[in-house]
Length: 120
Image 1 (cartoon, helix red, strand yellow):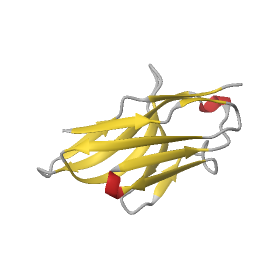
Image 2: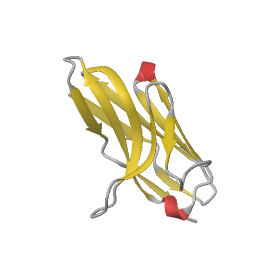
Image 3: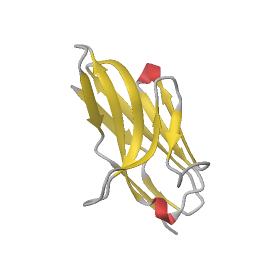
Image 4: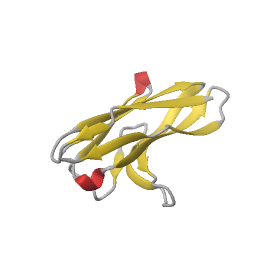
């Protein structure tokens, strides 16, 4: 079907920056929404940022002004540029894509998660 592969997580000091990437592959006709979420064990899924096919975007209040979501439609890839990172940004970040497949069905794909740790 559709696979999402994330990269770019790691350890960074407070105030630093990271850039997450998520590439989609498989039976893709088009990708409608792409985004990044948090989901800690036992907790509800939490939006970080999403971007539509027209590049309009939405952010969680906690990351507005610090994180920027973007996408490259030719590469089926979404990026999350994270600046001014804080220890409370530490979490596993999951990529999401709302895909129309080549058979014109809808498929909701999730990545495996990438760890972001902000610590001195």
